Length: 154
Image 1 (spheres, rainbow, N blue to C red):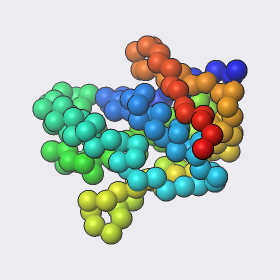
Image 2 (tube, rainbow, N blue to C red; image 1 turned 90 degrees about the vertical axis):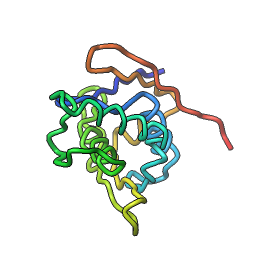
Image 3 (cartoon, one colour; image 1 turned 135 degrees about the horizontal axis):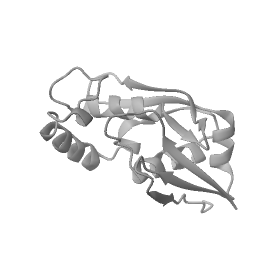
Image 4 (cartoon, helix red, strand yellow; image 1 turned 30 degrees about the vertical axis):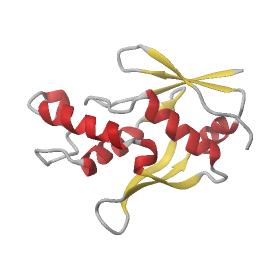
């Protein structure tokens, strides 16, 4: 068994990436046959969590940690939540190495459908495909939580 620590590095704002979001993302990478992929935004950011974040972040926008320098809008909507996730995912590291070559939010047709186009770093991609890999998410405050992937054969 190989243990790998995942963390968001260099982000001063409130981190919106939860262990559940990482689990969904890692599962999608594990299921992909290619290092480059498109993932619907709501496949890794559940609708309920996005709605929750919208309410919590908008009610706290007067606090500096909730201002998100890359977002100019005063009121956050779904698109801005997805933009924050994009920005923070670009700072995701596994054992001090970057996880993605690129991680880009795309609008699909209408502005209500979004997906992420991403390229996983080769080593990260292979780690996600190794059944011996175990992941721990390290929060900015040092707390840690295990991330469990589904390895059942279909």
